[in-house]
Image 1 (cartoon, rainbow, N blue to C red):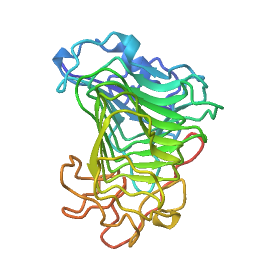
Image 2: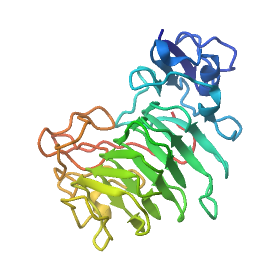
Image 3: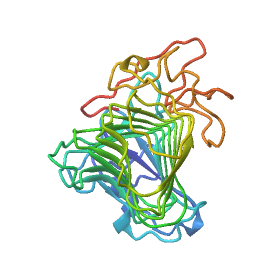
Length: 330
């Protein structure tokens, strides 16, 4: 049977049973550990909230959330783990997301490398450590079949794990580098990864394919202030369309319809990176071959010429202000 657990990052302690919104646990990991670990009966949902506006950290534990070591069985495309905001705590264009973070050189904030088909939605996931080399300083590590959507990821590194299986989708996400050496998404072998409506910013390498067995599809994504979109020495087959980049960027072969000339004025003030009206990203996307029909905040995409990036500009041209802070937030 399906299981539901509730987590409040601001709970006074971690002693409640987590079975209802009024009796939440304090940590995601506690809810994971309390579950049956058998996904054959349905979806395990961890509903996250922060009633006082705080974030979730566990004394810089490595990792903060570890699904891989929890012994889950029978994961599939229909029976999976879902970590997402509880009703009323979803991302909005006027406030930041629920925050899960650590500051650990070798830390992974959420590690689901050994649990397939996991879904992570609507969270801000950050490893705030800025080392001299990326190492294993990661915000997120996921396995095949996983979906990550409507998230802000801030870290020196994010990993899409390296065993073949179900397709991975990264949708409506902002991926921010934490240091000059940051490699965004390290794609492992025989993995098909689809990026839709993402913004990659402040990274040394946006996407790095480990081997020739990796297939990478990018659509309606923006690459800004990245030294490289893809490493020339990387393997993998690239496809996609309607991605934006700065003039002079070296582009991976395969994707078509590149939109050139991206400048800082095409975004709200960094580190926001939302598209602005009448800018390079406005109406420059495609609906062909994409699976997402809404933006990070649930706004419907234009049915023929959507905007590039995680934010769909309102029909009126207005652009609300959100915060992507450097400390704990709601």
